Image 1 (cartoon, rainbow, N blue to C red):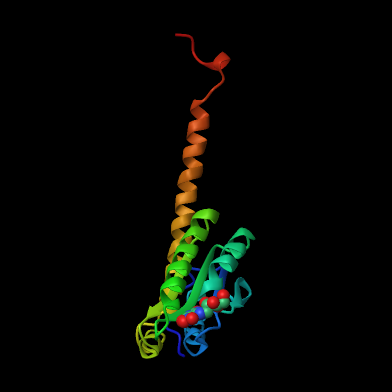
Image 2 (cartoon, rainbow, N blue to C red; image 1 turned 45 degrees about the horizontal axis):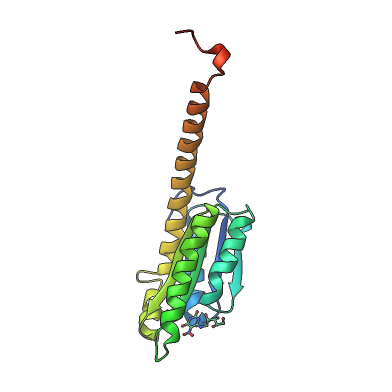
Length: 177
Ligand code: INI
């Protein structure tokens, strides 16, 4: 794949990637597009850590553990849950989306939902096609955006903490009324 120049906006970002092996003809394509997009934005290979899990159901636990390690600015979750004929679909897709969202709230580390949920294999293959709208590449862009957003929000948080402690002077130093 040829890279268009996208600058180095994400240089130094540390990104964890959890990818399901189930439906790996699809998830490998999501992963490749994701890694390419991160690279195009300046994330170096040493700052990307890929962990493979059996299926989408296992993603949230590992994503949360990676976030808790303190070693990642964001964790990207990649998988493909395909309805086919199985009622499994409902349970797995509901659980993986709930679990990933919960992991973000538990850890304050952005989690990116790059899990395809489709009716058919053909739909999943199409959404993992690099020449079209590839959800792996989109997940990478969302991760970069969320790292930037969370850095801004954390700075705002620190500034407001500093501001409130400045106004809380000890009673002895408060001007007399
Ligand atoms: N896992 C997937 O990632 N995608 C699927 O479509 C899927 N289906 O259809 O069953 C699937 N099942 C495996 C599941 O994620 C767990 O790995 C398994 O149940 C073991 O806990």
